Amino acid sequence: MLPAYYNHVRAFENTLVTKFFGLHCVKLTGASQKKVRVLAKIRIGLNTPARAELTVRKSDSDSQLIGEPTGEFYDVILIFGIIDILQDYDISKKLEHAYKSIQHDPTSISAVDPKQYSKRFRDFIYRAFTEDT
Image 1 (tube, rainbow, N blue to C red):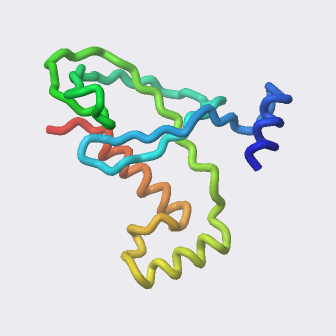
Image 2 (image 1 turned 180 degrees about the vertical axis):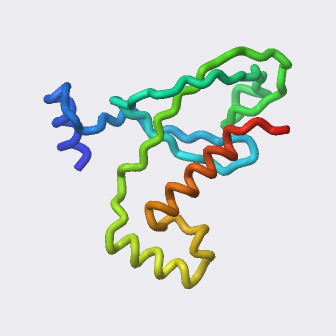
């Protein structure tokens, strides 16, 4: 699938097929690692100012971007386009949900109904990006 996709996107620059530019992993403070896909043609509807604090890495050999806060803050704008389009919620996902629900809490597994998935995703984004008080 990937070679055909790549050839199509390369041959038809104005294709309506989503263009994937990269797959990256992000680890939020106190959270597990999350995969982020970088796509083209994302419609940006809201720019929200944020603040970022400069941190100094402990060593160049560290595999994670961790370090000591410097106390220097900068205004930044974070723009996210998060789209989960790579899987349909079809009969195989429904069967996966039924099977995993027997073994685990049905609300905690990955294969859930799209409406439940949407709510869980929005709740996650809210928790990840709200200011700590």
